[in-house]
Image (cartoon, rainbow, N blue to C red; front, side, top):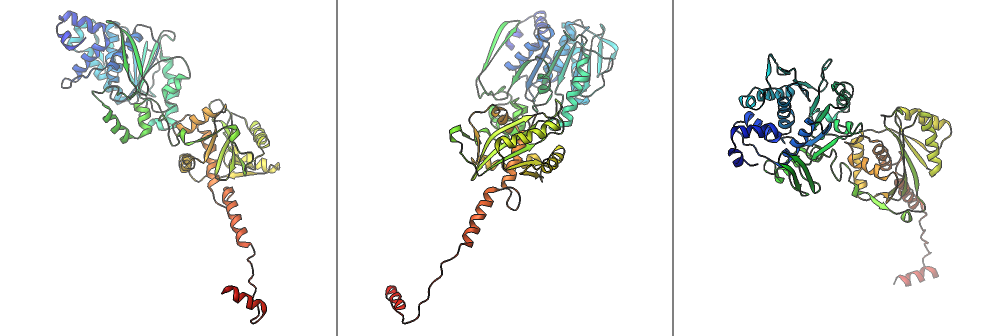
Length: 511
């Protein structure tokens, strides 16, 4: 319903629509909080409102909404929705979470302003209790409340019918493994248990994607969620069907179209992409935590080979191990990549990837070496790798080479991208391990795992090291050829005695 149609309604009809339609209610909230600004409606707000309505009605218990910054998500989820829920049920208990307490307080203050506004009082009978109107927790006369906290906050003794999580981490915090882990563990061990009714209580997460293992990536591995994802630029044709008080509505968006062109047209989004970089744009705006088509490495850079195109013999076969410290379920994998070196071309022959306790790891190194007849076995000289190197050498295992990196893993891979981009690294067209390998290589450094990346970068770094290091076989072969040519005996010129028959013949031939 447009603005002109709304102005034709009587006050009671208008209030009835605000009570029944969260989208229109949110628009009224925007006008209350931003009296000098014009509201720019868009279809994605209607879809979000419809899904949140389904949460209040008990039709959706777990909802994820991924949308770019400045998309009015907080207005809908953290301000309008709690006020609207308390309007319909003054005894509802709602817990709202944001990454910082000052942001949580700001959203709470805006929500409280809505509940205390005259027009809200005309729509709903809900009232705040006198002397219980603090920003962090305001309580209704029916003992319902909106409680505001930040990620990591203390919630002992507090419960909720609905938990709303609005951006649990700052973008820069998502780059920290420790902070991501802390936020995810706080959700698991503190926040999740605050639901009053574990079967019927609802949790809503509304956020921009920041990392593969951000809160959204974490919870998706635990239980089923309804996911609503809005890339700022559509990566495929989209169809969204929703139920509203006006009946079923259908919204379509074509690949390449902007989400909200009135606020952020394509040229604006392109400028944002250039400003914040591909990594950040991919997560925060496209809701795909690693860029489609590549991070440091792009999938199309690898050359593909069929089995019948693989060389029959290699100059050298090299295995590169990245060993994990522990074999717990959440620890990294131990990975061995096996490479065939043929001149300047490097063929990835196999990937071995498992979580292994130390004795099994040691057996696996021996088995992989025997299986491929490797000439060199690279193992990083740290943690479990140090003991592994010592024991394998003591056991007479030939070809074991200590690898000691001089830079961090991002710099190591970054320095090797030219070898891949220039087509010297070949991978098979098909292999059971290929999809996982390519995924990890192309999402690094934002991926959840990086063991295959480490193993690959270790081999490429070793390959490029010049003699006398243990690496670059190609360099050694070229150097040997140079020495062979230099040491080759040069022909000796025969000098004939002047006046001899041989001398006269030589002079005649010379003209």
